[in-house]
Image (cartoon, rainbow, N blue to C red; front, side):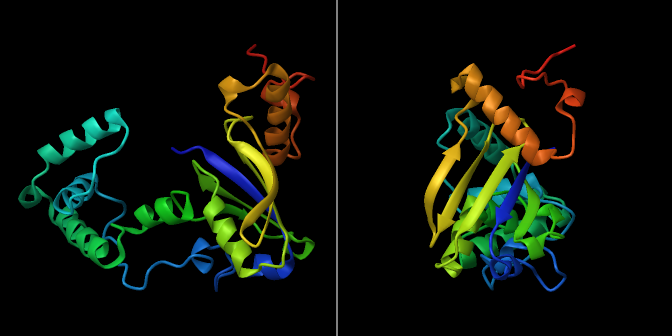
Length: 230
């Protein structure tokens, strides 16, 4: 399971409506669409052996991280296209075709590289769109690239963004963006680099953003936003 990151966007109704698809849901492909030639992979999820086989035949470079690179190299050495299950082989064909035509193996690969997050928006709240506010969750990371692209579509509009990871106090912050450029921002440092004062500040910020109607004491926080184990 991924960490869920909540994002709140404060912008004009016109800007926010542009993110909605025909079903009335926030959809990142309305901001940065998928390439026209990209095919969907068959099956319920991405088959790792099919992806490793596609990476192998396409000459995909190994990760810059030595540990991840070693794992990738081992997986690619073990994969045999002719031994893939039928569904995995079908995914392999689609992935190689996608890579040749679009530069990406599948939609999740595109999402990570272009949108900046693993999946589309979920756990959405658009009831306040008339009040110039929407919120949604994403997996692991905040979709900054989507919001930069959205800003470029409306260069004269100011967009204010707040986001917070469920790992309360980490991976959170707020900024204002206009014409694709961040004009002001305050982003939490890495947890291990924070002072006690900063930890309290960002814990309060993240908790209030994610759980605005909850009592922090019920989650184990004292009046100084310190977590009490007992």
